[in-house]
Every structure is written in C-alpha cells, then in structure tokens.
Image (cartoon, rainbow, N blue to C red):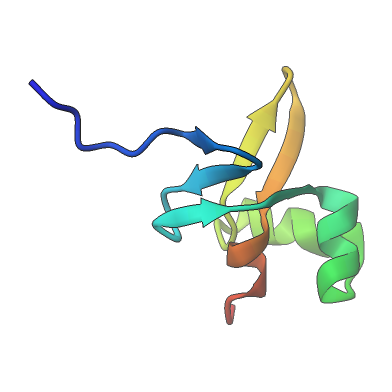
Length: 72
C-alpha cells in the first residue's frame, strides 16, 4: 500500500498543505520584514487563518513564505 502524501521536509523546504508545494518557512519577525508590516499584523494573519503556520521545537512558530506573499 502506497501513501500518496508527499514527505513533509525536502532539503531546506517544508510541504505546505495550503499552497500544495514545498516552501521556505520563516520566523514571524522575518515574515513581518518580508511584507513590511508589524509583527502584530503577522499574528493577525495567523489568527485569521490567512497563512499556514508550523510549530517548531515546542512553541516556536514559523510562517509559510509563499502564503505570506499571496494576495490576502
């Protein structure tokens, strides 16, 4: 029996279920710099479900850079 799900990590990239591709993930502060907004705005995007997040090492959040750059 084969599993059709892609592997979660491929090199330096992570599978984003929202974008359906391998993407780079960035810290919230880095995400804020990318889109030139305050960190609080990125947290609002997260709360509203506009970007895919990944929990790393317990409670550290990373954000999908591709979701971040898509039109909101």
